[in-house]
Amino acid sequence: MTDTSRSTAYLCGHLWAALHALRVISGRPDPAKMAGGRPLLDAQRFPHRELTQQLARAGERLCAAQRRGAGHAGAAAEIFRSIPDHLPADGKWPNGLEKADQEEFLRGFRTGLGQYETAHGAVMS
Image (cartoon, rainbow, N blue to C red; front, side):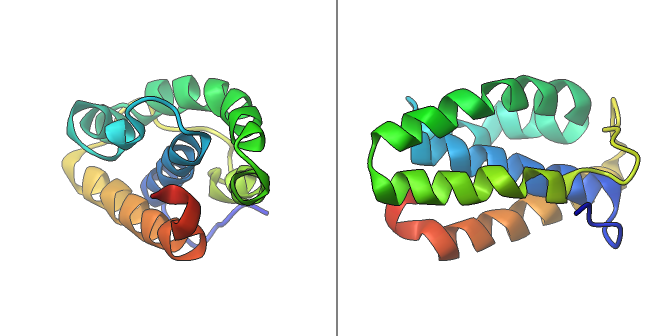
C-alpha cells in the first residue's frame, strides 16, 4: 500500500534506499555506489530519471540475490515486495527537487537505509 503520510520527496528517498539495499544484497560491483557521491546527489536532484533507471535493474538484482543463497534471496524478496510502499499516491516522481525537498529525500533515504541495515545487516555487509 502506498504511504500517503510522507512527502513525495521522502518516499523517493526511501525508495532509493530500497534500491540501494537490493544492489548491495545482490553483490553487484561497487555496492556502495548508490549510497553516496554523485549517484546520491543525482537521485536527490532528479528522482524521476534516477529512480526509473534503478527500478529497471531491480528484477535483475533480485535474481542475482537468489543465486547467492537463501539469506540473500529472502532479504531481497522482502525489499522488492516493499517497493510499492514507497510510491507516491499519484504514482509520479518529480523530475526535479528543490533544496528543501532534497533534504526530505535524504531523510527518507537515511531512514530507509537504517531499517534495511537493521533487518538485513547480515547480508548487506
